[in-house]
Length: 451
Image (cartoon, rainbow, N blue to C red):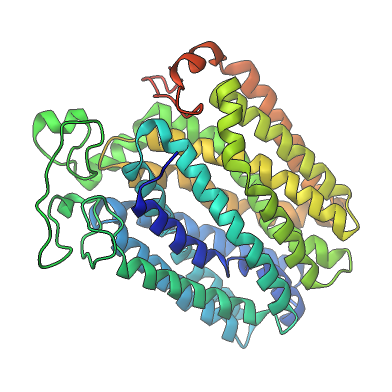
């Protein structure tokens, strides 16, 4: 299925950013090795980072709908680059703590506009495929990122943060020079990236083409809001967007179900480099293991479509949870690099199935003009997960051994799968009738179930 050219620009920019994206995974190892922080000190820094990501995600969602996608992404990327350089140059533990907090405040700003752009640029029935394509492309870039991490780690862990800062700035350069909104001519300068109240005007160039509102289903984003706002002839305020998102019980269900998956994912992100360290292996092994996991995620986008044709969203999520739990079990028992790589590869495939479907659900539930806000609310699960994951690693790892956090996460995912199987009705027959485009996601009714 073809994707709009603006989406490929977005994917390219985020892939460039991804090339240095493993630095955060090594922050715990940096603290242990160069600052001798100990388990408690390491957990404190990682927890501060996690707490800071919560307002970061909220700010990203607010700015995406109020200022536009592109300005918000530029703020987040340049902020991340600055904080990464603070960590790289930190002379003491206190400076590393400050750098981690600053990084957390900027880290999630880019996510709501990225996710909102996917929903704005792609028709509803192709969004899950688009999210999966984005995630798979990032996974492909992650293979190279793992190799970069393996090479750079040998020069010193601080250089990982320098490389990550450079890729953030390169991504910002791409975003700043290419239009991302449907109302903008691709490849031209555009000061308003759409998504906010000002997106009704095109300011991309001196000779910008006139904006035309079409009556077909492919209406450019930012022109037509949700039906309740179109009839009243007004654009929702920031407060209205947040109230609507926070009181939407359909979104609350998606957020609740995504919290477990997000927490488990962050335990793996922070825990794998520490596990490699505790097993007495070189940090370069972490890079190779992460590259193997990223490689396994590349075909995940097409796996999502194949599973959805047969079982729908519910089946995709259940399959992902069980697959990820199997990978976590391998990680808990692994002592050799090959087993570590296999466990992470299996986990990454399962995680992609769950996360891409959750993002598609939230993007579909959101009314036009509020997708950044809705996806920011969903993203709060990641802020919470990033906050509690270091505590899980420290508590369980110290008490029961380095494999215990991964075993506990596997049990949590299996429990979530059992609860989901018992509480969510199957949708298979209706999905087969409604998903003629490769099993892509259907609409969501008022209760949040698929139709």
